[in-house]
Image 1 (cartoon, rainbow, N blue to C red):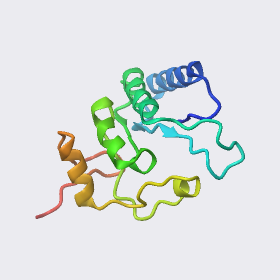
Image 2: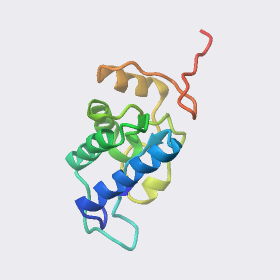
Image 3: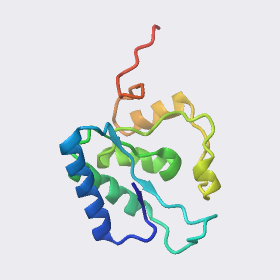
Length: 146
């Protein structure tokens, strides 16, 4: 869900409630990914840019409303690794992966790193007080031989 551009708070709530109802009906969502609008390099321009607090509030509200969707992602490329780390305590349970080279958000003005190593991601998760788990696309744990 893209947020932080032209919507008002009631639009975000309506969107979350519609997603919740659709998940109740279908059970088809594995994860929810809130994506903050990046105002650079597009025709909408710099009307508004979310703050870190906006992003964390959106993660927390999403987790409360969408308790029927098993996973909530704090996409580190979008919110920065540090904010993604904090988002784990606000209801997120996934930071996404190592990402080889992200370009879409960076073309829109993101200034975060374009990639993180596995070790960096593991350190971020552990420092937040959680145990990192490598997963596949369907959120099944990946077990590698030592």
